[in-house]
Image: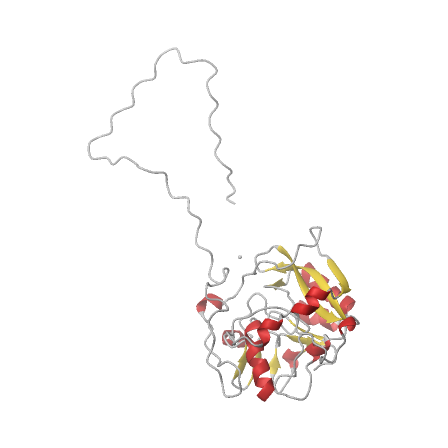
Length: 300
């Protein structure tokens, strides 16, 4: 899993381990000539009738719950478990259901439909990623992928991923299918170095692929993410769970897979079918643990 909030704790542990239909009202046309007689005086207002002092309120209605990120998002570190992960907490009501999309961090791709760009990783992107010379994949074997995607706000957005160059085109076809089906995402982004050492807040939801780190629970085996051969989608709506460990740590409400909410991956849904079309398998089918966000080329 590559959720923002769980990544730092995960790395530490691995080291042990959301118009009105009416437009503006037009002003009546000015008369073409002055009236021939003065207008009658306005009737006096009966005593005791209050005089209106202002127009009716035109404030926008309050947003629906879960459609706006709470102001504390990403700012409240969790208490740690002995293994270095954050302690699982009840899901805050502001995040159930969670259905907002964060502002894009990359320029929009042209057009108004699906679009993508696959290219060698620019130096500045590589520098802000988790790649280092000790990673099990060479920098020139990675691809920088920009994609159009649908947000929970029903708007077109643009995001970015790092993937193994050998699978980039296949993964693009998956995201094209998800775009056509309007499967929503909160954000697609490259995991930054800064998250490796940040304390877990349990509320991250970045869809991402390459992260240079060991497998969850291991100190000796690299994750498929470290090769750019795995991807995690909407981790908050699709958490990782093993025993009492939940990642992201505030996503416990989403372990109830029978109550389907936006962004959840289902066994017979478009996400599983799209990845199956390129031969990738889903961590939601694993028996010893459930990694509902995770898809990989080799099933690990």
